[in-house]
Image 1 (cartoon, one colour):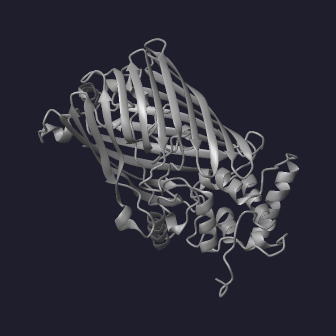
Image 2 (cartoon, chains in turn yellow, brown; image 1 turned 60 degrees about the horizontal axis):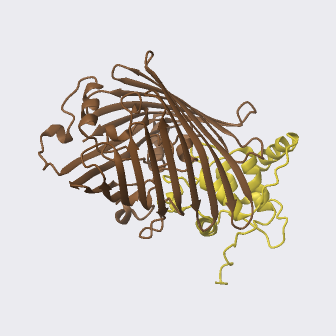
Image 3 (cartoon, each protein chain N blue to C red; image 1 turned 30 degrees about the vertical axis):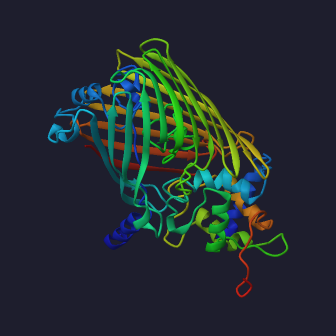
Length: 136
Length: 373
């Protein structure tokens, strides 16, 4: 279901014949997608930190993604299938564990979802995954 | 949906959607009721505590009147002290998914303003959205507190200088924080910061210049940057005003430059006020990448008896060089001023992505209760 949905999104985007050359970095995605869409004061701001997640700064996004295990990345990109395995993609395309799609009541633009999916598949530039258990 | 499923959805929504929101003044009253915010408010930027003219307006425009003063004037206060407060809560439906019933508190704050000749001290304190898993330590806060010097004590115009924590003055400053010119235009919910402001208010023009820094005492505050704002507005006639605005906001991650214009016109005969704000935002991310954003909001307000009916249209383009990121919103808000202290507001929003290109839509419908102390 998820890969199919993402495939449709990618196809639809390509069909528009519009180049989206936005940087695939944690900093860029945080400041242009997470902050305005997820990091609103009453939601995932550092002030409120709904469900323990904050996405209103690069540092907060790094911590939230890392602590929550929200993104799966591989050692050598491209990380095929990593987007579909990432909980971050699940909650913005379908639903979280409580049945809500994020951002609550205000979905992300398809192109932003594709940007995030591509960022994960390409190795999540700028994101430092937590060390494997036992290697702290 | 079965009763049990509905109950589960409601409880879930209550737990998840415990979002709240402070609300401020109605700029819809400027030009339609009087020329400046200070005509009705103690604050040179408008909002919160009312002055004598504000009390009179609250009483005359409400359905059933009642004494407009703090606690109906039953609690006497010395002449140098003014007290007030706002309580708000809302309930309704959110489009989801899943579609859910929501109930949530919005605001519970009290205000105090002590005036000694040219100097005054203002404090806004109360409940805020607590931090997850840290409620006891973060439930109470003082959102605003400042020391003010006023050139003409007791009057509604002249020079004001403020130092403290407040929302940097910028743009039209609608009460509804989801409005795009607030959410994406530089005055978000809880966007207060420590700063110093020099403000001049005259019936025919006003200017507000503010320098601000992010809260050094509370590093988790919403405003993460340091910068400055400028807002200047000229009343060309008693029914028309034009404004210009600018803001610089530099955080540890990015730099944003805002520029924009505002306009208002009041049509006396049909009692309709039109307001518009358009902003261009240039953002530069430190590690690489820039974008130019467009933010616009147009609001038409119709006044009939004790009702104010708002129809707003918002547009937000997060990056003008990338198609299909645009967001559009239509808001229909009906305000009923029942008494001098009680207001009911039916707020409705339809929001669209990629208008006309098949993007997702969303929306909500909420009934809000507002009690002014």
